Image (cartoon, rainbow, N blue to C red; front, side, top):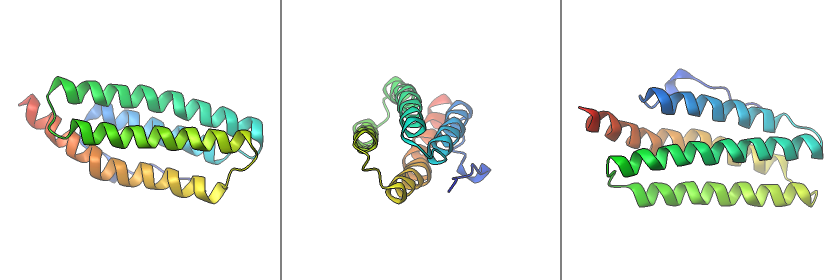
Length: 128
């Protein structure tokens, strides 16, 4: 399964949109992995980029005193925790690929379309 990027996923902030496209790319590489070594590498690459992306978003939130910063950061922490659980499952040869697909799809489609869209709207308004 792949989760293709679509322009309707854009949140209206050029940098965040570019980072989200990269997240989709890394998630799809991870989803296409078929053995433990490639799953591990995909998980590590997605985790690393996710931390960078979340750090960037969190910095922007603090910079503009975004009112939903704490709730948004909690969402990020939950996603990172889930990525850690997936890495443990890979290491223990207990990864459920369908569960991985569902998690990544939910994260990329729901989190971005709900939480990040609100953040981007606030960023655009703060820049005015």
